[in-house]
Structures are given as structure tokens and as C-alpha cells.
Length: 115
Image (tube, rainbow, N blue to C red; front, side, top):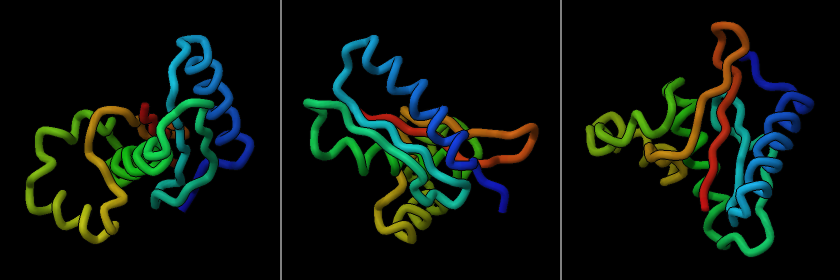
């Protein structure tokens, strides 16, 4: 399994952090590998305590399916989604807020935001 490097993960996180701060948003952003394992994340001052796990769970969904998490919302109650969410212990949210990351045509991770 090829995954984002730490340097790539930190670059994604730095770009996301710059945009979040520019917008004045209170949120968390997580970067995961193709399995959904956490690589890097941040939580801005004032962001809710629940935003870190939600940002990761959205990224997990995008990594699992290689598609933006918002595209998965419509089928979130389908048996395969419900099964995967249960298998992940509730740590997968097929809702708006995450994008897969590719190197060429290979899925290497995902980034998700919440807040």
C-alpha cells in the first residue's frame, strides 16, 4: 500500500490550516492514509471537542471509497455502508467534508474537515 509521506501530509495540512485561518473558521482537519489511519491533524482554537474525530471519520470514508465523502451521503444507509461503518466502530462518516488524495492514479490517502 502506497501512502502519503509525512512531508506530503504536512503540506496538505499546512494548506488547509492557512485556508481555515483565512476564513476565520473554527474546525479540525485530518489527513489519513488509504486505510484511514491518521497521519496528521489540527484543531483550531475554539473548535468543538468533537471536530477531530469527525474530520478523521469523513477522511476515512473518502479514503475507503476513493471519492469525495459528500458523494457518498445519498447511499449512507445502504447495507454495505452500514456494514463498513459498523466494522470501523463508527469511525467512518459518509458525509460532506472530505476528499481523497491521489498520486497520479493511485489513492494515497484523504483529507477531511469538520467544524
